[in-house]
Length: 346
Image 1 (cartoon, helix red, strand yellow):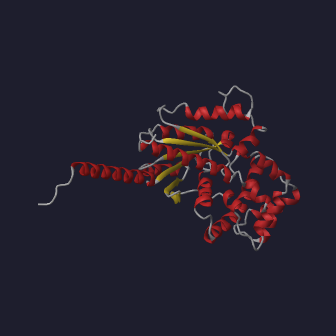
Image 2 (image 1 turned 90 degrees about the vertical axis):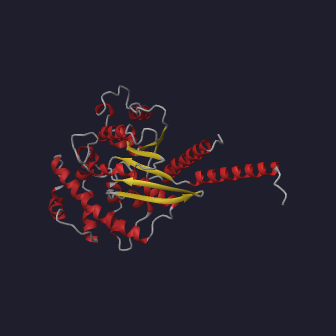
Image 3 (image 1 turned 180 degrees about the vertical axis):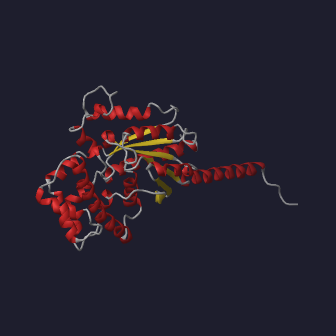
């Protein structure tokens, strides 16, 4: 008969197996996919956040992407000028008499050419359209309209290729569900973006499974604007109601939230022209940027029912890559600490 294993050796072996199993479980925990669900109303900046992730962690934009935005940017210039021409009539701000024939002609354009680009430039230089654009809280036009119309010569050029900044500023409404997967420090991440328009929100329910964090994007500049889908509804008020109903939903009651108060640059510009308290009468302070930022933040956070859940707030300009880098660095730290805590290290 062979020698029986020493009891001390058996205990040591069992202890080693437990340690190895614990190490394996900890490795699996740290390598588990982080799923971020990106929500918010239409044009809050969600898709710009996704584009920044593409730039920072997923090799940027390829030729196919640039071709897509090439067409979208040129098509948007036609749409923007038509929108401004219509608004000039609706608001009673007439264009110069010498531009009236050109304006009528432009309304018939559907396809962008270099000639169409030059005509767009002439119309954009009309003081009436500039005045109309300053009143864009009275009608719908994207916040980046002036960026592309100011660059119409470059966009019209035969050798035009969209730059990163062009792509970040280009508006293509999100329909359906889109996602991006990437690796950071050997941890897989997935960001899921769903359409923000009212008609798209019913699709959110299918994306709730396995969500690590909810990222909700708010456009700070929308405090004096109405919804594209409902001209009687204030856009920021709609955003507040949507966040509260989402955060208090049974699927999300324990999910930590990241609030991105976006378009802070446009918000600061607007405050000098548009009194905040006219649109939020419950605000009794002065038209001060920092005070209003704090007021808006509290309006979003206070109605959240689960006071134990963590809500992290960031004020951003999503077209600024460094801003989004800081947000994501903060998020990585949160995930690391959370997983250290789950493994019992903290």
